[in-house]
Image (cartoon, rainbow, N blue to C red; front, side, top):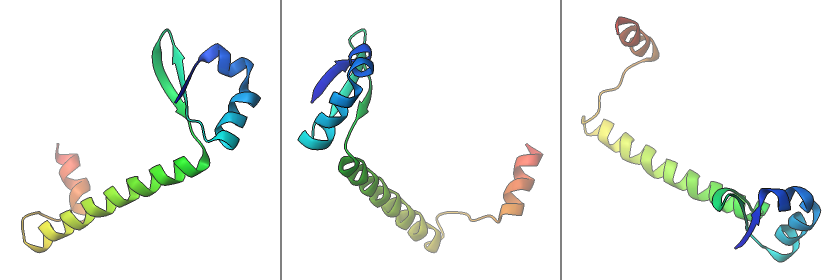
Length: 87
């Protein structure tokens, strides 16, 4: 993974993007030796989103199973708003 300072990214954005797009590089942006963010290709972003969606689906299935087993209480939106209003 390529690590660049914020100023280097700012000065060489076109070159940085080309490294990401055409070479498949992942770039970490640093300030004062602290990693702040990363720039990745659209392919990498799509993969990350697929992983996130898969985890969300697993959690939803787990919760639905607990509801079906009677281990979770379910409230309507109105009931939830009432409970929140009561404090």
